[in-house]
Image (tube, rainbow, N blue to C red; front, side, top):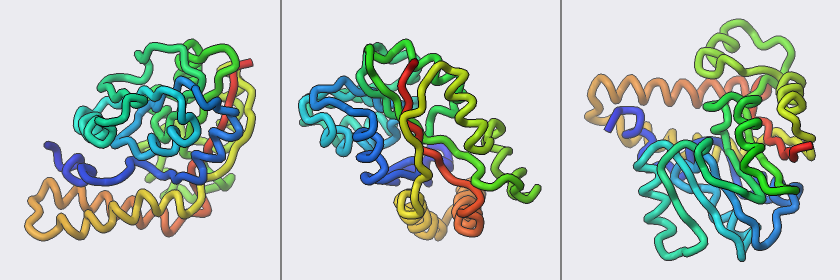
Length: 236
């Protein structure tokens, strides 16, 4: 296992998010109790419980590229016939789906390209919710911009994000910026794991731990300058 996945192996989630923001999104989307749901880029399955609350009579297909995340999801939901976990690309998932949930993973496809791809997988009247890293200020300092855009080269402000949603042929139903609590749901366990793994870490793992801690420190220092926009959209 690579040093990166050694750090991430036991984390409860793979990006900012929480039950409250998920509940807001599914409520705004009008997810039916028997909805067919795609959890695209599901990670270790952190949002499946909330999706089942929204659609207690529904079916969830959870897809992720990383096999160990899929294995964890399968193990966690092995006794739940409403959940299927599959390794692969969300762009290859069969539809149609009444609701598509993509927490922090649409950027792998590109927002506009990803939305166009997912559009063909939505049932009539279906909706999609996704979170995307955005600037919350007009003029982030050059160092901060360089740090974030090195990993997220398409990162932009809310106005550009909404232009991309419009260009992909969707109507924006609603949008919110994820709370500090949603970020801490990701970073607090990561910080604890960084501390746990440091003793005896080799050079490769130490580098990954340092990068993880630097990422946490960057957000805590600049949390008012960037964040995740959670958008709920429906094809026009």
